[in-house]
Image 1 (tube, rainbow, N blue to C red):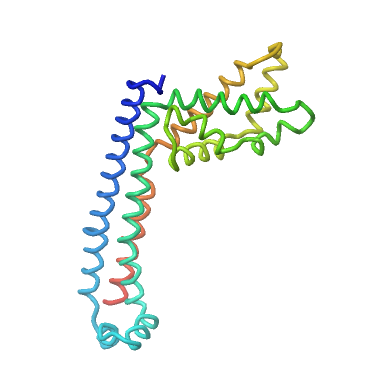
Image 2: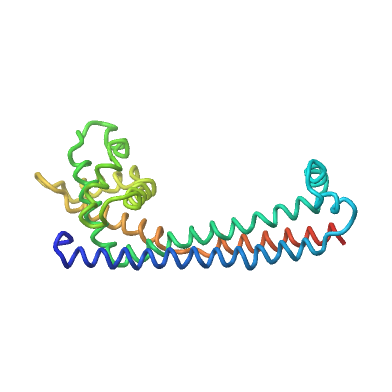
Length: 238
């Protein structure tokens, strides 16, 4: 059980690894922002020429007017914003990598416990027409987060995991699949429904795997947009 000393130590180690992965990705994003974003920005500034740009560098109201009325200077401002973009991408990548450690270490336990919590609430619902299709309205992030506390502890990260899973679960589709299975194989006489728990566990595990899979697509999009913007800026000043 996760409540014993060994389980607590395992949870601490998992949290430490996740924290290091998050910090590493954020540092990489910061370095990318400073080196690439800042480097491109200062390179572009070195290419700016003309009296309008001198006025912009002089400061004051004239600088603001020059900035608003000069497309090359607007490009410079947008290039500077890419420093922040790369840092934000590092944060996003760090969250995914931290979740990767969490899923690898505790994914099965999280899926089973969360599936049990959701299934228990579904089984307690009345079987009247249309009620099951509103099952998502009966599920509470707070209650399910408390149920996961022995596995993951408490905090905003746990609530984020639960909220993500609930948003990703196609409840109407899953309940239709479950009801069809009950009709084909018969419903259990009373108590827990193993088929419902198995279905929820499988779908929750799939959602966690998606959440824990880092994607480089946003970085590639940012790099492409950055290069395109620099190209436009160089075209404007030359």
